[in-house]
Amino acid sequence: MAGRLDGRACIVTGAAGGIGRAVVEAFSREGARIVAMDLADPLGRTVWPGDGIVPIACDLADRAGTERAVAAAVETLGGLDVLVAAGALKGGSGPFLDLTDEDWDRYIGVNLTGMFVLCRAAARAMATAGRGGRIVTVGSVNSYQSEPNAAPYVAAKGGVAMLTRAMAVDLASHGILCNMIAPGPIDVPNNGDSYRAPKLAAALRDEVALARPGLPEEVAGAALYLAEAANGYTTGATITVDGGLSAMIFGAMRGG
Ligand SMILES: NC(=O)c1ccc[n+]([C@@H]2O[C@H](COP(=O)([O-])OP(=O)(O)OC[C@H]3O[C@@H](n4cnc5c(N)ncnc54)[C@H](O)[C@@H]3O)[C@@H](O)[C@H]2O)c1
Image (cartoon, rainbow, N blue to C red; front, side, top):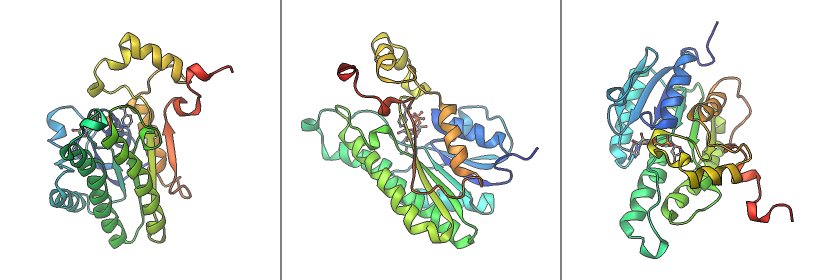
């Protein structure tokens, strides 16, 4: 039976991370040909399930390096049909009053400027080939909702939401559909046991409608839909994968 991405040429960034790796695995099962990008050779850290996955190192903080990495990927794959941009610097940076210029530049540089440079390079390759494409950015529920001590991350993720919509508008005439996934709390190795720690586990039970953290595979499922040909009319949209976190009013306010 044909896979949902049979023969499609895909770049996945953040491929050594929890969500990126799940995207690589899901896309590979569906027949995609994949360049897996991350800071270091992702193949060195893991065993991939399928053939046709080529690692290319890419530091999103390095604009010229990111351009080169995309060019190498396009050459390797003989074109580009899909970009899933999951790579990002995560975590809080501290209280607002203590933030340094360097804190700001680090998060904006990787998570917003890096995202822009990456998407522009991918979009140029797709537009030049003239056969359309799919760009899937990974934002966050923090694209819309803040949390303490994370201003640069939250600002960058808010920027990713509008960058994605702007790309959807500007690239529509090239047949390039651009959408964002906004994950909520997803249980990835890099988060350690934090979602299983008693305090956070109790908060998730209370504040997430599905009462648990999500799985990276559940984010990959959304990426798969946005990347495949069956998606012909969704562009500039966000798929929120947060177990109902953002659908529900804060616990203390409920029942009033
Ligand atoms: N896990 C969650 O709860 C959650 C929630 C909301 C949004 N997200 C978003 O999902 C995406 C994937 O996150 P994850 O949870 O898999 O985290 P992760 O830390 O496991 O993966 C992120 C990957 O990005 C890579 N990366 C970091 N800086 C980079 C740089 N300068 N250049 C290239 N790659 C770089 C890391 O090496 C890592 O492999 C991120 O965009 C993150 O912001 C995750």
